[in-house]
Length: 116
Length: 117
Image (cartoon, rainbow over all chains, first blue to last red; front, side, top):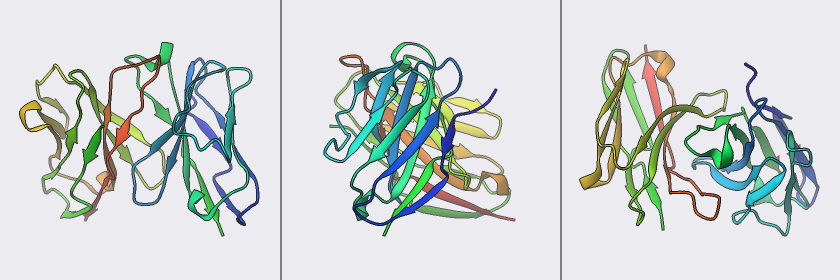
């Protein structure tokens, strides 16, 4: 079974530039998550999708971050404009079933973003 | 508010030693889930275990074992006879019950385990 695919693996941009990350979840997984993991810290949930709808985006900095999952399959996370403090690994995860109940999330390898 | 504390930032052991990774949590929820994840150098988080708050039975899976103590709000993870391949960052996480259709998990800062040959 193919895992969660993310691209690119690495990205270096200058502050105030824009960047987008892509995630393709495991086939059939209804729930998709984006996490931000700053170096030396645990992952922090940014947004959770159920199919193509947003379930929770309370921790997403909406002034600069946006995410979509238009067809309920793959998803993109965008940062515009980027700040130095956005340097982190952005992890995508997916899980089966409704709202991730009693099902575990499978994670991709992440995109490491460096903002200089 | 929820909080997960992994006080050990880094642990270094020699192969075949036993090692315990500590996890202490805080929550006001009476029902919750606790997790351990492994993050190898490749970056992805690998699920290891999930434990319901109402199930205090300890669990063993091969060389891995988990000790859940609700009275002390701890969920410690022991690796017996450690191997070099166990080298990774290990995260403990707390997940509240679903509210309004979603939940926000809280991760600890992680413990970096280095197993030397």
